[in-house]
Image 1 (cartoon, protein in one colour):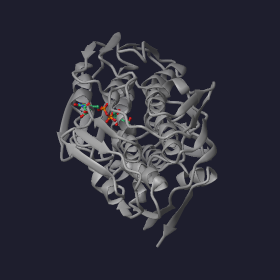
Image 2: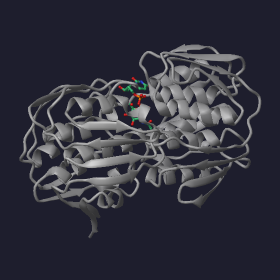
Image 3: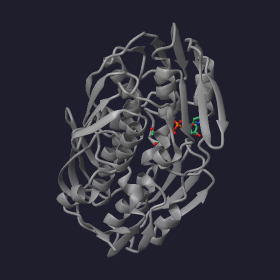
Length: 418
Ligand code: UD1
């Protein structure tokens, strides 16, 4: 059992480099098995979700070898099974991408129902609706989703809700579908574009990714490729917020500043100086931080995956801030843990009202999911005294070497294993 231990109130100063995007990585690894060839994936984050997926595709017959810590070579020419079992993927939500990928290539897929972070009901009806529209027959038996099709045929699919997962899954399945598949009301998140770019490098014909209408022109064959995945927008945002809460001065490198627009705008509104370069953003928070209101939205709006970290920041700012969560129905579970550190927050359904305080104080807390864990680290950096965070496994799912990166910026943070 590990804990993260932080002695707070150290100003973060210096440079931090951001890893590859988790949410792109967990889709690109399954996408690589569609190729029936060798793919080299670079700039992968060194996190548990990546190793779990690499093991899962090994189990179905792909050869999967890390060339170095961030580069994976996937040879999918000898896949012998279309069944991803519960043990290999129970921990991660993104296991459902194996469904679209295997269905696309083999016209058959069986995948255990996804796990992952628990913040309310996480339906997959839009994935199923899309795959069925392409011609797949789908059933759920004993926790296993079974999909099969004699052939897949392109069609128009209008998503009832904007879903990142459904958009990517339909793209994966439609690569080999006959004719044209049109996804309307598609998600526009940066990693949707990254998966489309990757598939196009393999020989797919996908147009419009990054807008709300994506067209997939079916092809007959793909080939291998070498691809470097985009930087992690959420990891970058977490360090920008960590800089702000410690009144620090941090340059966040290896990012795409455009992806950070909604957060940069909020930090400026809070009194931070935010400067953008080609592939970095500097956050200087020397002035008193004032509270703001934030509503989570699909991209390019404020990301729900930065909502808990933003709540932590508002907890230590001056005045009252309101967070409205519009994406997930139950994403405030972590607030009871933030309150242990002295945060003054009232939650009413999907709205959190945060009274900023200068008196966050260290305590023992527990990460309830990945980004909740990040929020506790951020609050711990600002709190007086010692904060001990348990359930570190959640944080490890999305942050590569978080203690090392924060220590280099001047934080006093370490991992203690009992
Ligand atoms: C992805 C991210 C997750 C992020 C979320 C929203 C990955 C691996 N995870 O999750 O970190 O919080 O996007 O930005 O990329 N919905 C349905 N039916 C469906 C699918 C979704 O109703 O079939 C609803 C969900 O309940 C939710 C909303 O749509 O309210 C968005 O979900 P979605 O974009 O699909 O999230 P994920 O892809 O699971």
